[in-house]
Image (cartoon, rainbow, N blue to C red):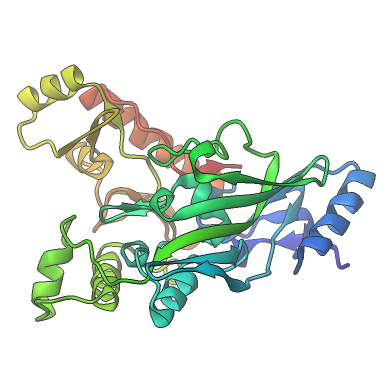
Amino acid sequence: MKIHEKHNLKSYNTFGLPVLANYFGAPGSLDEIKEQLEWADKQKREVKILGGGSNVLITRDLPYFIMHPTFSKVEVVDENETHVWVDVDGGLNWHKFVLHCLENGWYGIENLSLIPGNVGAAPIQNIGAYGVEVKELIDTVFYLELESGVTRSVKNKDCDFGYRDSIFKRDLKGKILIYKVRFRLIKKVQVETSYGAIQSELEKMGIASPTPKDVSAAVIAIRQSKLPDPKELGNSGSFFKNPVVDVNTAEELKSKFPNLPNYPNPNGVKLAAGWLIEQAGLKGKRFGNCGVHDKQALVLVNYGQATGTEIWSMAQEVIKKVQDQFGISLEPEVNIW
């Protein structure tokens, strides 16, 4: 068991912030996780889990024991004529998993191509894109309680999934490590192309009858055209949640701002945070070493030398400007450490 001291986390967070972790471990199995948790307990060190580092803004050196799981196995556990059930280790890169599914003829997940992060984080956020949410594909989530070391599992219906939300983000936040997720995927080809720019991208590609691989390629092309590569420009993807307001508030806003994009859903009306930020005059605006991306206002970027504190200060300025102009309070989608 190897524990690193004063470990630089620059390559473990997609903002590329060179913060230090007092202690750092990269367990390669469930047994190693338990060993490292025992060590942290004896040392009286608080444990935090850092997966792909794409959903966190680190504003300081961290006094914790940072655990970065690296195990990444994929195993078929059951199948029938129409579906396959697959167990996937939490340490596997999400996009690698999507590509693995496509190569094996397991479908339903292709609209979630190129979302950053690891499999273990997917249920926490209930990641979603282009008309698909991961809750539609999850069968069971397996997790370990950090305090007791006990492993448990929870079925989809008990995960309390919502828009970018779940029980893991609320009741269980900071208390568990998701070490495995069981997915129920489709064996029969069917595609979802009605959302966003997928259809027009497929037309641009000259594809009239798309396969799931074609849909994945279209999603990748759209995301790459809008979102900067974290390897080239530090960012965490969408920094803010799209706000959900009640119907009356939405109607009031639409009367003032007729072009306001709005999407009715069971909880009210979802608004486009990127549009609100852009209308507040912040798209492409630079704040010293960081800024609001010039192609997608939902994305905050590190131009190379920014600190986490600078980025968080900019985020708060964005929140204030949108609040002042629209009366809407934006919430960060990323975790602030």
